[in-house]
Image (cartoon, rainbow, N blue to C red):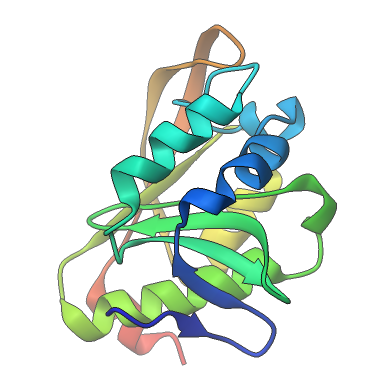
Length: 166
């Protein structure tokens, strides 16, 4: 997929080098980075640029944009991951973006899709549950931005569950 994914309100597109400052600004907010295990705090432009450089040619790691402004990011391979800038929380943008990327995933494969969230992240729990993910087990990981262990709720979405959702 060289083209992005268009939804009613969003465009999901490949990351660009020019996105680095905006990514650093949004994910550099501890209210965002505290829910992501691999993100350091403070998060700087060099961190954003390294992330973007790793994914420039990747059609499975996409910037979430609204009116051409980046508001978050989502990635999908065998696992779904995402983040959204705090000013955009509570507006349904992440539900819209993840629905679109999961639809594309299951058009390409019937493989189970995995994801998870740090316990306490009610927004992520709602998004995954709405998509049809079911809890499988808990795990622990170090949250880099908080510098401590957190508990992760791991979840799985099967192709059969996805197809049966409507």
